[in-house]
Length: 53
Image (tube, rainbow, N blue to C red; front, side, top):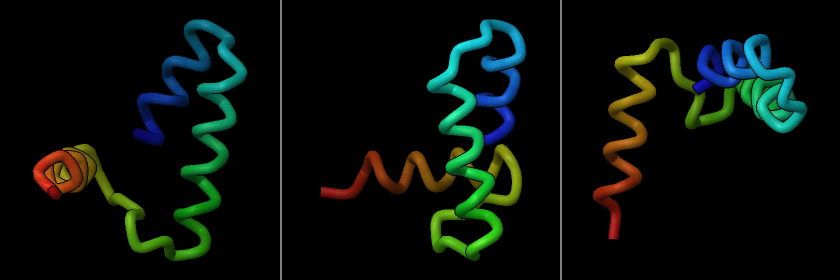
């Protein structure tokens, strides 16, 4: 999600996507439990959250 938000920001200049990028960056520095390492891990987390009741 972090990479996507940065790419979207650079293409569109959308401020909200930049804010999301910065938020994801802060989570990574703080060792947030939902911190993802790569796209495959990110997809696994998203699928897990979608299947939760």
